Length: 101
Image (cartoon, rainbow, N blue to C red; front, side):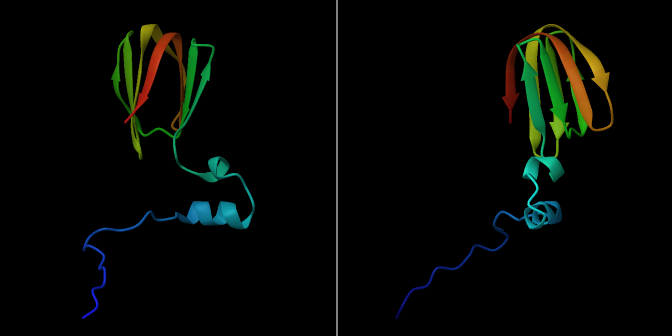
Protein backbone atom coordinates (compact mmCIF):
# COMPACT_ATOMS: atom_id res chain seq x y z
CA UNK A 1 0.00 0.00 0.00
CA UNK A 2 1.34 3.40 -0.98
CA UNK A 3 1.55 6.03 1.75
CA UNK A 4 0.53 9.58 0.93
CA UNK A 5 1.26 12.73 2.85
CA UNK A 6 -1.74 14.58 4.16
CA UNK A 7 -1.90 18.20 5.17
CA UNK A 8 -2.47 18.76 8.85
CA UNK A 9 -5.91 20.08 9.65
CA UNK A 10 -5.95 23.76 10.50
CA UNK A 11 -2.65 24.52 8.80
CA UNK A 12 -2.76 26.88 5.88
CA UNK A 13 -0.05 27.96 3.54
CA UNK A 14 0.98 31.58 3.23
CA UNK A 15 -1.97 33.39 1.74
CA UNK A 16 -1.61 36.17 -0.79
CA UNK A 17 -3.76 39.20 -0.06
CA UNK A 18 -5.92 40.90 -2.63
CA UNK A 19 -3.66 43.98 -2.43
CA UNK A 20 -0.63 41.84 -3.31
CA UNK A 21 -2.48 40.29 -6.26
CA UNK A 22 -3.43 43.74 -7.56
CA UNK A 23 0.15 44.99 -7.13
CA UNK A 24 1.47 42.03 -9.11
CA UNK A 25 -1.18 42.44 -11.82
CA UNK A 26 -0.44 46.17 -12.21
CA UNK A 27 3.32 45.54 -11.89
CA UNK A 28 3.56 47.82 -8.85
CA UNK A 29 6.16 47.27 -6.14
CA UNK A 30 4.53 45.30 -3.31
CA UNK A 31 5.63 47.75 -0.63
CA UNK A 32 3.64 50.54 -2.32
CA UNK A 33 0.30 48.80 -1.88
CA UNK A 34 1.01 46.35 0.97
CA UNK A 35 -0.16 46.82 4.55
CA UNK A 36 3.08 45.34 5.89
CA UNK A 37 5.07 47.62 8.18
CA UNK A 38 7.93 49.54 6.60
CA UNK A 39 10.73 50.86 8.80
CA UNK A 40 13.10 53.56 7.59
CA UNK A 41 16.00 54.82 9.70
CA UNK A 42 18.00 57.99 9.18
CA UNK A 43 21.48 58.06 10.70
CA UNK A 44 20.59 56.53 14.04
CA UNK A 45 18.64 59.64 14.95
CA UNK A 46 15.24 59.06 13.35
CA UNK A 47 12.91 56.10 12.73
CA UNK A 48 9.95 56.29 10.36
CA UNK A 49 7.40 53.46 10.74
CA UNK A 50 4.62 53.05 8.19
CA UNK A 51 1.53 50.83 8.55
CA UNK A 52 1.41 50.51 12.32
CA UNK A 53 -1.70 49.69 14.36
CA UNK A 54 -1.06 51.23 17.77
CA UNK A 55 1.53 52.32 20.29
CA UNK A 56 1.85 49.78 23.10
CA UNK A 57 4.48 51.59 25.19
CA UNK A 58 6.28 54.90 24.95
CA UNK A 59 9.09 56.16 27.20
CA UNK A 60 12.24 58.15 26.50
CA UNK A 61 14.19 54.88 26.36
CA UNK A 62 11.76 52.43 24.71
CA UNK A 63 8.93 52.52 22.19
CA UNK A 64 6.83 49.45 21.37
CA UNK A 65 4.64 49.65 18.29
CA UNK A 66 2.01 47.10 17.32
CA UNK A 67 1.49 46.09 13.67
CA UNK A 68 -0.66 43.47 11.96
CA UNK A 69 2.49 41.36 11.56
CA UNK A 70 4.18 41.73 14.95
CA UNK A 71 5.64 44.16 17.46
CA UNK A 72 8.42 46.64 16.70
CA UNK A 73 10.55 47.66 19.71
CA UNK A 74 12.82 50.69 19.39
CA UNK A 75 15.31 51.38 22.17
CA UNK A 76 17.53 54.41 22.70
CA UNK A 77 17.81 57.62 24.66
CA UNK A 78 15.82 60.86 24.71
CA UNK A 79 13.31 59.53 22.17
CA UNK A 80 10.33 61.66 21.25
CA UNK A 81 7.55 61.50 18.69
CA UNK A 82 8.17 64.02 15.95
CA UNK A 83 5.04 63.25 13.94
CA UNK A 84 2.16 60.81 14.18
CA UNK A 85 -0.77 60.00 11.90
CA UNK A 86 -3.17 57.07 11.75
CA UNK A 87 -0.72 55.14 9.52
CA UNK A 88 2.76 56.60 10.14
CA UNK A 89 4.90 57.57 13.10
CA UNK A 90 8.28 59.34 13.23
CA UNK A 91 10.42 58.87 16.33
CA UNK A 92 13.64 60.80 16.88
CA UNK A 93 16.39 60.71 19.48
CA UNK A 94 19.49 58.61 19.95
CA UNK A 95 18.37 55.25 18.47
CA UNK A 96 20.33 52.23 19.72
CA UNK A 97 18.32 49.26 18.46
CA UNK A 98 15.24 48.19 16.49
CA UNK A 99 13.71 44.74 17.08
CA UNK A 100 10.88 43.16 15.12
CA UNK A 101 9.09 40.20 16.74
